[in-house]
Amino acid sequence: MKNTVLVNLSNRHIHLAQEDVEILFGKGHQLTHMRDLMQPGQYACTECVDVVCDKGQLKNVRVLGPTRKETQLEILQSDAVKITKGSVAVRESGKLDGSAAFELVGPAGRVKKERGMIIAVRHIHLDPKTAEEMGLVDNEVVSIRVGAPGREVVFENVVSRVNAAYAAECHIDLDEGNACGIGNGSQAVVFKKST
Image 1 (cartoon, rainbow, N blue to C red):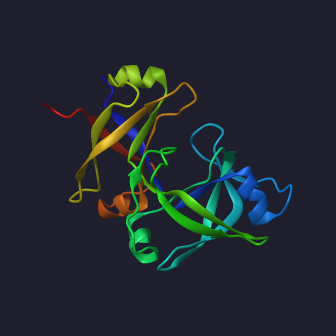
Image 2 (image 1 turned 90 degrees about the vertical axis):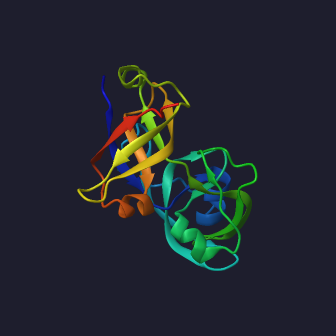
């Protein structure tokens, strides 16, 4: 049975709704493709925004495309302690109820968001064939072992996301990757929790 998956590190980034793209970058503005990401149809844009919170700000946060139904800002725990007095919830992408507020500043305007700032939960994107080979199903919570020699760690509470549109890839954030001494292109061993 297959039990390893490619790991890439996720840095702070933002997904914008088209309405916010136009406020921040000008009416009719379309996001500008810079480079493809590993997940099909996802890409980094040339556009960046500044994020303002009650304690500080983040400059030049990369926009990822395509646009989404709702704006979602994904930051690191190390960012959260610098920019906000409150807590930032660890959430799955798209689950924004009760998430933190923030303000965005772009070259053409500013927009305040009442929700949408999260720290992304660790997760694995899997196509159905790979998920079957690994014995995993959608939304199954697993653990991964990853790290440079002498820095290996086990990360628990890693959510499996299975969809025909996905490529097999595990996302942990930059803070987590730095803690265990890895970079993009590392391999993780995936295992189920024993009960």
